[in-house]
Image (cartoon, rainbow, N blue to C red; front, side):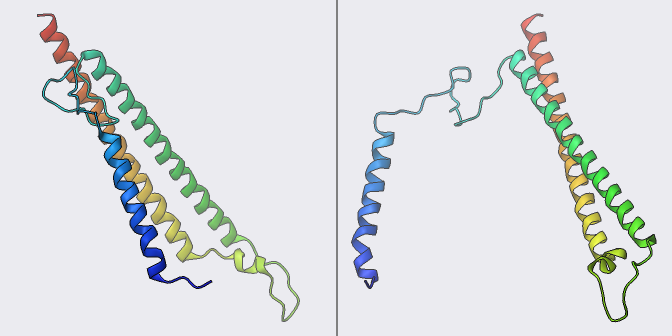
Length: 159
């Protein structure tokens, strides 16, 4: 059966109309409700803005956990890079396996490290390490900000 763009046009139009009706019905009867803890601000879907000292402390702990995860990732890539450099160095010092004249073996190709591949892995790991460290530092700064904000809220609450 041959399909033409004309035969698809009514179904696409019908789908667009149906999507419009569905989307119009989803929002019907729903009003945007402001965040009860922050009058005048609309709550962003999926986000909770900290308003109390306890909220800020909880956010600070989340950021510290993120920083620790990023540092673990950076350490993993440091170890990965060191292991690959060790492997490349070991392969470079291994003698080529014995071979029959006129025959080559796949292991001979691996006996010498590829400087290009090692450079690629090094660049990947170093870039990843740097990025993870930057993210960890930023998360620690944000955690300190939220701890300071929690202290401010406690001081103003208990003068």
